[in-house]
Amino acid sequence: MPGTTSPSVPRWVASPPTKEALDWAELPVIDFSKANTLEGRAELAPRVRDVMRTVGFMCIVNHGLTHSQTERMFDIGDVVFSQVPEEEKIKFSSKLKEEGTRIGYKPRELFVTDNGVRDQYEQYAVHRTVFGRQKHPKALETYLPEVRVFAEHNHRDVLQNILRLLALGMEIPEETFVKMHGFDAVGDSHVRWIKYFPLTEEDEVKTNHVWLRGHTDTGTVTILYSQPISALQIQSPDHKWRWVKHIDNALVVNIGESMEMLSGGFYKATIHRVVQPPADQRGLIRLGMYYFALADDDVKLVPVDSPVLEEGIRVSEDETGLTMEELRKIRYRAFGLKEANMEAGGEEHIVENGIVVLKYYN
Image (cartoon, rainbow, N blue to C red; front, side, top):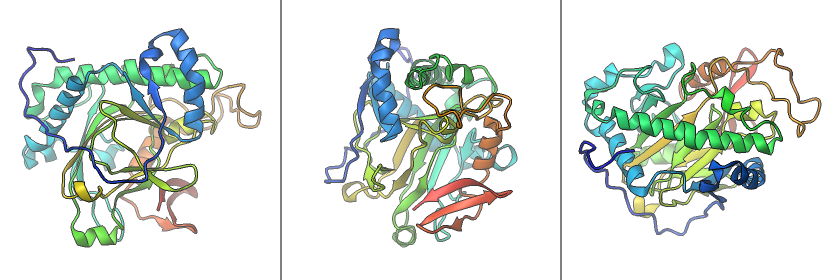
């Protein structure tokens, strides 16, 4: 990570944490310094297994970056929004509709949230290889070597150890899921920054103060760098929405649809949403930083062979199943772009060829 000779970068000044008394989710905190050894992973695996089968979210501390290193990556993330002209952002737009990929810029107001209201967030996604898959705006070029180191840290030091813990929880070889997430393989795992802007009061009412509808992630594992503006809510096992509390320099980790499929439902994709911040943080711009992990494009999303799965759930490798690339393209082209149908119970779904490809949870 950056040292004393790193190029200067404008500071992103984060908001103080909220002082509001919110209904906080009780997320287990995992000390990840233990995840670097076989003995440490054996100790952590049962707890991670139980957490990711029930709550579905966990917080990770001691993940290998200092507070100042994490802050600097937030600073660099802000550069791609505040230091890049709009016409240049258009030049580096993601090919979301054409190729079903999030790599590049997503402008504000591309997606419909609810009642015809357009979203108010922009994002920039950097493919994990940084240099090989895409070109970047000029303002970011100075910092690309640091972004590459950051991407590798997330992939090799954080993600791979999470995948090992998930495999141990299923009593299978710990490299099982790691082998499906090659850093240099063809796939879409990426660093992403998202910048949320406040909605108008009228649109807040129309959307019931929800900025990003309840959903599950497409990939296998999502890594969120905790930031102080409270807006993320998770659907707890009792189906109530609860706020995720900021922990300084911590990671918030959840399971996506692909891991649910690979694990035969042993691990559940977790439902979450983004809402208007509490009263003492309203009107502020919220900057998020993430690592979205997806399996390699050619991985078939069928259950692994595990003794913890019932016989009827196990599927052999030659069984027909969607590949990661196929699922990614289907869901990315649908989210916020295609009209959903209302189900009983308040859920909305998008159906293609008789298959539910995406659900929103209200």
